Length: 125
Image (cartoon, rainbow, N blue to C red):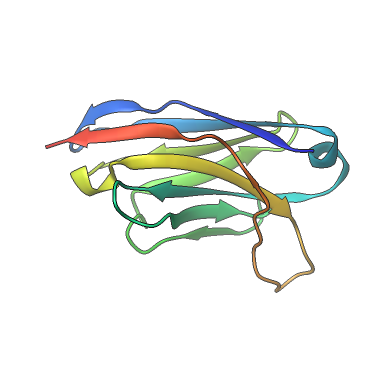
């Protein structure tokens, strides 16, 4: 099993910053290499990809809408993944979800099988 618990959400003014954290645990997470990512879902919209990082931290991926503003990182030993969000905009308002999935061979697509419960991020104008 894999358990993912997000924290760090809240209310911030436009232009501000927040740092989201995701703590991973579980027997499955400890036994295989896991890629991790962040997704978000705004009211009335579908869940969308935000950022991802390979199990060894070697590659990171970002949605165009957050490039240059958000940074994903992980602490492999602590089983933590982070999302540093700077220059926040009202359109970043959403529930942010942490996700994890088994890492495949080099060049394969990311895959996310496990999800956290989400943390609310609200950016006021």
